[in-house]
Length: 211
Image 1 (cartoon, helix red, strand yellow):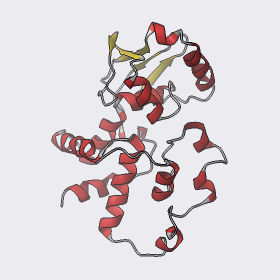
Image 2 (tube, rainbow, N blue to C red):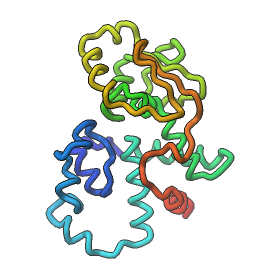
Image 3 (tube, rainbow, N blue to C red):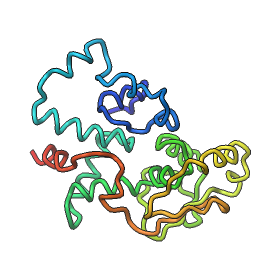
Image 4 (cartoon, rainbow, N blue to C red):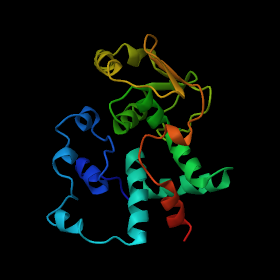
């Protein structure tokens, strides 16, 4: 399945949840979800009145999480299979694995406007993990990992302006630590289920894949 390249605000409307795909726009009154609480498309309003099947409800939860973290269907399935092999609850494991993705960690540290923006910065080679160049957005961070901008990137005027803007808005979760002066962050603990900000019933995803 190819990556979605259409208007991302339609995805938030389809899931009826803010997926924070457009950065600051999601927090403003310009967010389309604030004005149109129904599904996108000509028949979006009428679709709301239809009763959803259990499969439909489970599918929507899976799509919500997949779109929130910006992963493709095949990638998502691999995360689920890995979560199944881990100790503990599969649903909790799935969400914490997705939280540990490098693009998500960079966004949560406050170094990008959105997860999509973080993915672009990683792909363009702006970051180091423990002093080594990592340009794979799906890289799974571990406790103790240090993420930093490359020296050249940190001196870039556009990135300096971006950091100045982001610094005033960032809210770093307690499992991460941001050092704004040195443009680096650290994973001080692995994320837990309660650290996931997306409202989701992960047990529905487990039921969907367990059929």
